[in-house]
Image 1 (cartoon, rainbow, N blue to C red):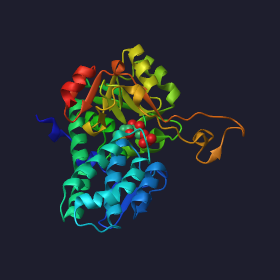
Image 2 (image 1 turned 180 degrees about the horizontal axis):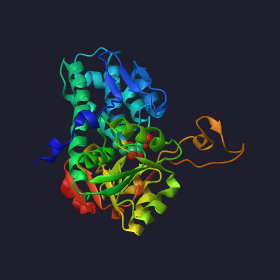
Image 3 (image 1 turned 135 degrees about the vertical axis):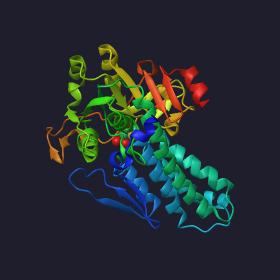
Image 4 (image 1 turned 180 degrees about the vertical axis):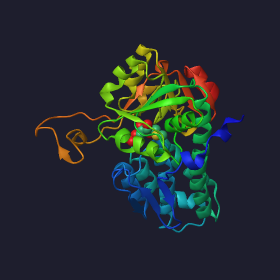
Length: 353
Ligand code: MRU
């Protein structure tokens, strides 16, 4: 049987974080989920940049898609005879979008795509960039569905999986990357148990991932981040499955803080480690993880939970929000182009060179 037909996408893909209305960009406000379902309306590219920076929209592919629509919004304010002229005027807005967050390469990738089509566009440049933003979103959804099938195919029947952060529909155009693999794996009967890390300090796992899975009717068990090694020792999980914010030319992968320690613990316990990300997350211009800029956020994110302060005044905190997992801890890298087992520079070059 063709396994793509086994997945009921109407059941397993219900949430859309980004909606282009033709006039404005509506972003499902991920700071407020799960108890408040509210949308942020962006009418300008600077509002989109602010929404990205403030994590109203988050997740590497979703940030790229939102930025592409941000360019469409920026274009509203200018007059130009062709795309090249428009690009000149739009460049400051593109740079402000690009500066909204540093680690996820999908942001720069989407803006580079918008630049490229603008540079070549004629008098119809407005339609050209709107079509390109739409294409970026549609291609992301298609990539996620393809990766879901590929990744689920690696998982043995009856397996338990652990995921980190939120890599689902909320973080993408839909379906998700690592969470897409988990959705496909559940649909196909390969995944029997799903565990999700809380993902301190912003609680993407606790607030977003288990809520998303609940919408699909998928049971998930929430664990404290610090319970992960203990869980692996019990034998309940066979795969750790995570997304990525930037994958380097040698396979080193930046993802949500805490991913690296999961990869170390997985190797120690004989648990397999899978990274799932579209080709738009691959950055062949960055040789290795040392060159990735790791976003540092306000230490205040560590001082409390849900707006209630839990830490004494006058305490210092360090808040890097991504880390880098070295390629040799990755058992499988899944993109829409296929599966790379034990990625390294040569295999990356062959797939993405
Ligand atoms: O800070 P966030 O929530 O944007 O971080 C998100 C992650 O680290 C995800 O794992 C990654 O972007 C992949 S999302 C498909």
